[in-house]
Length: 299
Image (cartoon, rainbow, N blue to C red; front, side):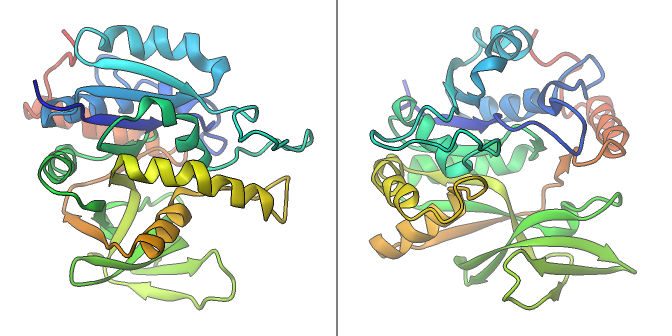
């Protein structure tokens, strides 16, 4: 049997702009969720374990709606992202309501990760090719990687979106700038969330991160130690987040490694706004009609 290849799915966030728990909003022609298609593509690519990072209060819902039907196809485990899961001696401000971030989410899944793994968001449809690219990289190299989507394949007509805009040399990541991105009069504009940085424009094929990484167990070991520094130096206990891109940047610098950007022309779909839902449903129906996916995924 092949070594364990784990897919970690970040699903603890509530879709505030969408107006509910969008991870379990039916999108496929037979009631499938976006997350169903991601897991189906991952299993086809060779991933043999799925770890859902969810809020404990949503466990029964996730297990009923998603987990139960997957268990005969792939190993399924659950990690809970909760304020109580922090290093010994750390106390989270009782007034805090904002999640502690994607880095903390991965920290909460630490005991379920035993080897190479991919990280994705439950909110996004990534396409089949990127899972194959990540599986190949994780099985056959020691690289840390990020899937680089073309920005034009990831934006919505219904408003601005937040994207991790990649700047590269060759195929190595130089910097990742978290930005507000919007297409205005046919031109794609990026406004860094860091207000000290200048706004910029991009061509439609500029690479961006959609939170799809190929990572190694060593990163989790590093993160378990590094998160202590985050809490020790936290400036805003109510809103500051421990973010995975920041952890990756620190790890790469500390270890002297490069993060490889693997390009894809795959089309991204997601539901940032309610108006996006019809577009996504139509896209899945079209892919089923074309035979890209079976009519019922998990039969």
